[in-house]
Amino acid sequence: MIFTTLFTSALASLVTAQTPAPYTDVRSGITFNTFQHSSGMFFGLALPANSTSSTDFIATMGGKGTGWSGVSLGSGMLNKLLIISWPNAKAVVSSFREATQYRSPSVVTGAFTQMPIANGTYVNSTHWTYTFLCSKCIQSDGTTFKITDTTASIGFAVNANAPAQKSNPASAVSKHMAQGQAVFDLNNAKSDKFEMWKAYAAAPRLTRSFSG
Ligand code: HEM
Image 1 (cartoon, rainbow, N blue to C red):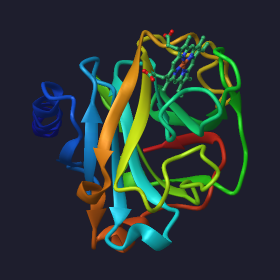
Image 2 (cartoon, rainbow, N blue to C red):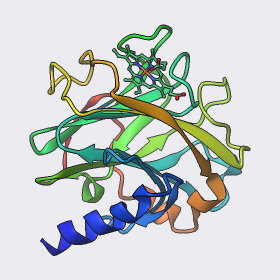
Image 3 (tube, helix red, strand yellow):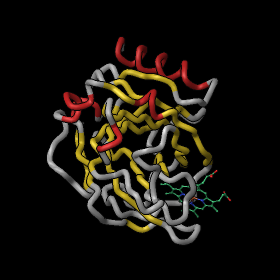
Image 4 (cartoon, rainbow, N blue to C red):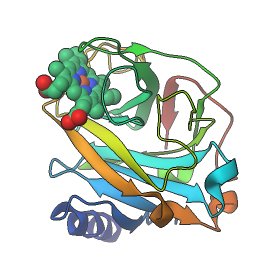
């Protein structure tokens, strides 16, 4: 109960501005520069202090209820690296996607991987949170922000309804009910604790379910 209150109030304080702001997850202790949409959908980024040589970041994403949350690491929906996640009972299901048209994006594979961070991945009665090391996720082909960028426009999309096949990471989804862009100051995502947090991550996974 204490945890729920802290969690809700910490995130609630981010709602008004819709500008990414520092948020520390009470379970993992990781501090993210976090955007929160008024629906409860959120996405946070943590980067190494010297991030210009790393293509990795730690992300946290989630929302209220049982619908899906998605982000575009390259701002728009088309021809960008997308990540979509949703809760399935007490687990979280996630996958990389790519769309060449405005329809349910297909699963995409590459060098990039999601490695779940168990102490930051959980589903409670109101919210769900998925925290992961996104390894080799910062690309140089225009599908994501670049390692040399100081700001990144991250696209977000949210739907309050669960996908048709909740246990299948490749499930088709219905169009988002809300979408937009959030500009992240990447300097505010940097931390010298990144290497310690990174060590929390489990083995690489492309697409699957994670229990927190
Ligand atoms: C059936 C599934 C989907 C359909 C039909 C769809 C369709 C569209 C359309 C038509 C737009 C242009 C804006 C508008 O007219 O609303 C758009 C924008 C966008 N979509 Fe999707 N989309 C789908 C799924 C997704 C998913 C799964 C993600 C993320 C993982 C996503 C991320 C975005 C983003 C980031 C934008 C740009 C928002 C902005 O720049 O303001 N979409 N989508």
